[in-house]
Each structure stands twice: as structure tokens, then as C-alpha cells.
Image (tube, rainbow, N blue to C red; front, side, top):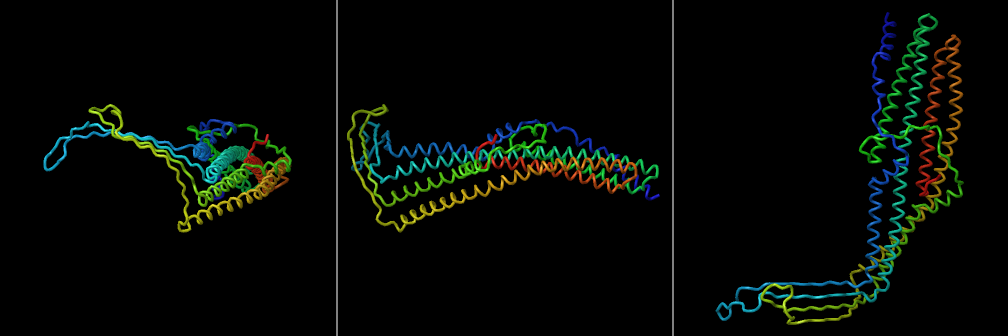
Length: 441
């Protein structure tokens, strides 16, 4: 009697709560293409926004470096009002002059000689802007890779959901078959209980797959900065992208990738900065100045300048300055600039070696995954044939439920391996594109 109650309880757990259909409703996510998702993410991502703003700042940095060749100009103007009186020999005498007084001045200065400091500073700004451009490329492709991986994660979750639904259907078929065989006494109740447990496990697997799909959609929505939920376009996901570029061409692209170009531009900027530092520390600077000041303008009422100036002063001057000793600050600045150049050179060297190493790993990862996809398709075809045969044998009583369960588990495992291999191949190709800084068609 207890065995019958246990059997009924398991079957009731599987069929009674209709919680599974509630999870199947669409969440209203808007399908977006991969291209649109990448475009939106590149437009809204904080790292790409920061990279574009660095370009804006870099352009003004270059303009500022060129502006150092031009003279500095300034003008001044002042107006003041006097009233009241002054004490003279103990007697308060009223102020009798015009109450309004004015003054104005013009000033200009220019560096005549600095040993090349301005030239090296300009070249440093140009190299820094090249580094900003390469960084913007790096950030764009980095964001594109992240979005593609998440987009492919949505496709992976959708494929896992389909695989879970198929596994649930197969488990339900097995449960129906075992329940029928139990009724006629052909098999023991254990087979039916095992089949019921298998259905429950398949339902749980499907629920997890749908939860993963919702999570993947939420992550994709955040990356594209959409106000409404988005998801990947439902399409045939069986194909994987190809890699039609040979290894030698990819190696050349990687050796000229944005990461290496950025490191080279940074090194050039640091070298030019070191030269500018050396010239500013060890070469005297010659400067010319011009100053004109006029004062003593007066008027009874405010009239923006008054009459003729009571006094004017015009001054031309040349100056030269050189620091003989400043507590070894000059030597410290020179050493810091030299160390920065050495560090930047080491970064460039490491970037070149990293390009060879990372590219080889990514290519191997892609090709291994692509071969795995082909193998898994064959494995799934064989597993489906084996499951069909085991279902027929089990229906005729020629095999046990354990044999049927083993075939079902093998088919489910092969499907998951295929889905994971597709995801790996897609993400590896996206990583290669980010690494070389260009799209592979």
C-alpha cells in the first residue's frame, strides 16, 4: 500500500502544479540584430564615451601645443571714483579734482628660444592623440566583443531551452510507456518511478534554461542601454561563423593591431616628453616682452575713458633665465622622464609578444570549437538513432529502462556539448576581431 501511495505522490508532483506554462509567457523583449546591439552599446558604453571625450581633449591639447609659438597677449582697463575730502593741517578740505579716474594697459610676451621644448611638446601632443585614437578603437572593439558574447549567450540560452524542451518531451514519452507497461504488469513500478523522476529533472532543467534566458536578456539590455528589454533575434543558430583568413594574414593584422599601435604611440609620446623635459631643464629660455600702460585719465562723469592720459609708459624687454641649482629637482625630473620612456618601451615589447601568443590561442580555440561542432552533430545523429532503437526495444520488453535512460542522458549531453561548442566558436571569432581591430567578413 505504501508503494502505491509513493507512486501516486510522484506522479501528482509532475502533473498537478501547472507552474511550467507560467514560465513560458513572452516577457515582451524587443528583438534586436547583432549589428544594432553593437552600435547601441558602442554609443552608450561609459568606456567608449570616455574614449571619445579623450579624443576631444587631445585635439585641444594639440592646438594648445601649437599655440605656444604665438605671443601671449593681455589687456587691462580700470575705472575708479573718488569723493569726499582730506585733512590738511587740521582742516578738512574737499576733493576738487574730477571724480572719475581711468587706466589702461597692453601686454605681450613671446618665447624667442627654448632649445626645441615647444617643438617636442607639440610632437608629444600629436603622439598622444594617436594613442587616444588607438584607444578609442580598442574600446569600441572591446565593447563589441562584450556585446557579441552576451548576444551569443542569449542564443546559447535559447538553444538550451529548446534542448530542455526536447528532453522533457522524450522523458514524458518514456514515462507514458513505462506507466502503460506497469498497468499490464510487464515491468515493475520502479521503472515508472524512475521515469517520473526523469520527467521532474527535465522540467527543472527547462526552468533553469528559461531563467538563464531571462538573465541573458537582462544583461544584453543593460549593455545596449535600452529602456525596454531586448533579446537576440530568433533565427537559425545552427551555423557558426567561418574564419576565411589564413594564419599568416592574421599574424600580420595582430602585429599591427590597435593595442600595439597604441603602445607605440604612447612610447613616442613619452620620448617626446622626455626631450621636452630635458630642454626645459638644461637649456636657457629667451623671452621678449612688451608692456604699455597709460593712467591719469579723468572726467567729471563716467565716460569710458576720460580725456588725455596724464602719464604713459612703454617698455620693451628681453630676458634669459637659467637655473644653476635647484636641489636636484632638475635631475629628478630628467630621471623620471627617462624611466617613463623605459617603461613604455617594455610595454610595447610585451604587447608584440602578447599579440603572437594571444592570437595563436584564439585561433586554436576557434578551430577546436568548430571541429567540436562538426563532431557533435554526428554524435547527436548517432545518439538519436540509439534512443529510437532503445525506445522500440523497451516497448517490446527487449531492454531495461536503465538502457533507455542511458540513451536519453547521452543524447541530452551531446546536445549541450554542441550548444557550448557553438558558443565557444562564436565568442572566439569575436575575440579575434577585437584583437586585430577589424571586422572579419
